[in-house]
Length: 159
Image (cartoon, rainbow, N blue to C red):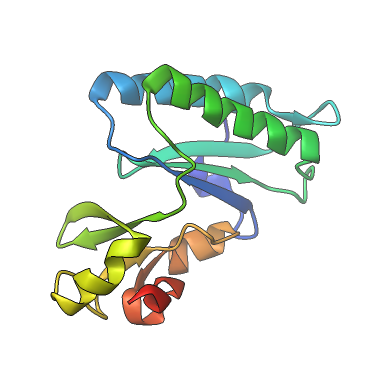
């Protein structure tokens, strides 16, 4: 597995947000499975220059430098299968795209899309609340615009 810092800014990114945080033993399972997967992740029988990490004990993040070797449809499918296998192993979900993560101070919270409008009216969230944009595509975006104020985020449409 390549060190995250060694990944170039143009590296392609996939973010999977879990529906809950993980225990220490679950984190160990995720990190072990992720290491095994990344070590063996290939496209057209060529090793991918890739890494993965668990961020905020909730986000599974995969990165590939596609200038070395592009992630093929089959290699992307294999990464999705790895995430699905983790879902089964850990009894969680990584594919519920209707729950959004945000920071309340230093605490990571989630909110369902349908609850955004009321939470905004009640002041639970506001235009300065930091939301996580899991739709970003590159390492540069991960570092510069993954965490963004609600007023500047696509999440704003639900308030």
